[in-house]
Amino acid sequence: MLTRRQLILASTGIGAGFLISEIFKAKKSYAVLPEISKFTEPLPISFASAAPSSLVIAPSSHSFHKDLGAGATWGYNGADYLGPTFEITRGTPLQLTAHNNLGTHPFANSLDLRLHGIQESDKTNPRLSLHLHGSNTEAKSDGYPTDTFTPGQSYVYNFNNNQEAATLWYHDHTLGMTSLNVMAGLAGVYLIRDVDDPVGGNGPLGIPAGPPYEIPLVLQDRLFNPDGSLFYPPAPWTPEFLGNVATVNGKAWPNLNVERTIYRFRIVNGSNARTYNLKLSSNQPIIQIGTDGGMLNTPVELSRLLLAPGERADVLIDFSKNLPGEKIVWQNDATSPFPFGRVNAVLNLSFPLPEIMQFTVKAGAANPKPIPQTLRLHKPLIKPIANKPVRQRFLTLAEIVGPLGPLVLLQNFVYWDEAENYPELRERPKVDTVEQWNIINLQPVAHPVHLHLVFFQILNRQKINVTQYLKSYLTTTGSPRQVRTHHIPLGGPTVPANYPPPDPTPFAVAPPRPPAPNESGWKDTVLVYPGEVTRLIVPFGAQAAENLPFGNSFTGRYVWHCHMLDHEDNEMMLPYEVVP
Image (tube, rainbow, N blue to C red; front, top):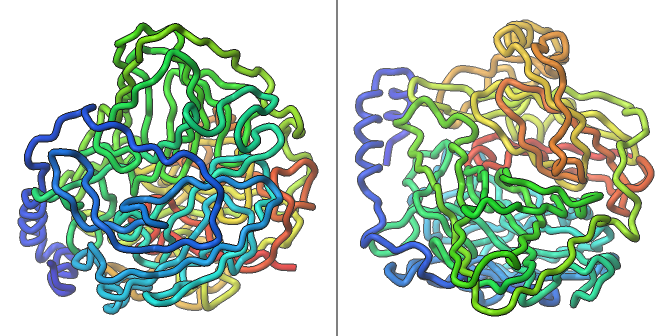
């Protein structure tokens, strides 16, 4: 483990040779041994079941492949890794009591005590916070990163589920250690049903619901020690964790035997940092019917499905035309970190993952099913929000870089504790109003930005001249910063910019691009490309506009952040407050 002095020396260039040698040693310290076979493990499936009133979080052990031993993991409600898939009908409230029954953290040596929130006690008495990602819920039940509970304690969450049918997922959201807690296994799928997509199926759309043809898929890339236990690099902090093994539902490169009919897959990108661009080796279409916040208006036929960390996709695949015995591989051609990787190959412990899982077509007669062409029978069609935004906000994504890579990642060049302590340094939208959020990515890496509480519409994306924008940004006089010289957890210069950032429109170098057809639904996570501004129309309450996909108007503190979990843990998350 590198000491603080060694890392600071490296960040100034003095100790660069030392750090490089240590990183190369780390790269050699893990490998999958023995070589594991692909597509020999059956896909584990957690079919949807009724949501419980209690969620027990406990230690366990799990083997990701028959050729790997079992290693220490965490799970929900008796699962040894990840958690059950829950389903509940729209408008049915759920009071969920989460119990922390954990002990020593499986990644105690990876906890970097310099990151905000991390405590020495987390190694043996880890804090937890449960976030239902995609839930329109009250602030105290949202999984705020400091609303934590320790071993022996419980926390009561109230979800009223007053929103459209959609694919949600629950996962840990503890300040400073979300990446490690999710890595240990704390994630699961949560489905909301409604009249178009009821519990048990037999809905008016005629699409699968429940076993055997509706299957949740949690995609994660992982690294392993020779004994089969999960590997995460020891402290200090890793900019982007990327694994060399594809796991789906907790198994390495699994196989699913499918009948010759239509299957519905509820896909969650649960990876730390990896974006997937999925295609089928048979070149048959992937038919997307839903996104983060629920059903699209009509199905979108795709040759490839791009899915960033935190995003979900509800898709249909028709195997009725495939021949018995045919093997179809779900392939991935995305570079990570997306879209270009990092130039610095020392810090970017990058592994391509060209194959994710396999489908094997079973013998039997073909059973084709019709694909509905209208997906919102009992819900209004999704149309652009007509209400004029009451305010535009300009929000930047940036990093402070040392000679060997990023030291810290920031939104608006504001730190978590600054925004926590000074309301003028956080966004404070008024309840039941519509705002336009313009997110400006000044980095070479695409960031999946997630807003808690609400769903939004993507207005457009537009390329800008980053050099000229930064020149203006760093010389613009905005509201005075309360903390002008700030401690950067991993070393480096002081914060360079005032708040708020300037409008990027004068620096545009290309016309705006509309969202892709499969992004035209309700979203809570959006991929913000390098050197671009991504514009969002955001309703902060059920009365902000007509025909919204949720029915609540809550006030209180929530967060917005990058959903690359290693970025989130090192400052790329800020509180925002919905005010009366």
